[in-house]
Image (cartoon, rainbow, N blue to C red; front, side, top):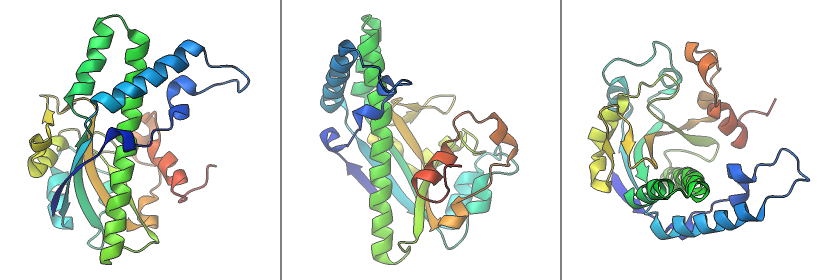
Length: 240
C-alpha cells in the first residue's frame, strides 16, 4: 500500500492558544494586542500558503528492519530495537507543508518582519505535527477496521535523528518512500527540504511495547523528552 494524502490547511485544527507566544508564566498577565493581531495574520497566511500532503507506505517487520539498519550508524541500544516485533504494524511516512510557506517565512525575516515570521514559523511547526497526528489516527483506525490492530493497541511515530535512530536513516527511508513525489528532498546532511516536513515510521502494537524506560545512553542528553510527554497524552504513563 502506497497512499498519498492531501489536506486542506483550513481543516488542520491548530489550537492557537498552545503556541509558544500564548504560553504565559503568569496566568493573570495579558497577551499584548500586537501579538494577538499578528498571530491571527500568521494563521491566515498558513491557510493561504501551506499545502499539506503526506505519503504513507506499509512495510513488513523485516523490510523496516532493513531500512532502520541503514548504514549501521544507529546507537547499539535504542528503543526501536526493543519495540520491533513481527506482530506490529509498520507504516513509513513523510509529510510536508510544501515549499511556498517555508519561502514565505524566509521572505518575512528578510523584510525585517521578524514577529510575523516567527509566529508563522511556530504555527507551521504546530500545524505539521497536528497533521501528522491526524494521519496517524486515520491509519490506526484503518488497521483496527482491518483487524490487524485492536482498540487496546496504539500507534506512535518514530523518526531518524531521534532516540538512537541515526539521521542518515533518512536516506534509506526516503529512497523507499520515493518522497520526491510529494516535493521532499534531502540535503547533504540528511535534513529535509522544505523545512516544514517530517518523516519516520508509525508503529502499531501493544501499548506496553511503546512504554520503554528512559535508560538508554543518549537519553541523558535529550532536552525535549517528547517520548515521555506523548505517553502521558496517550494515557500510557502518568505525569509523575
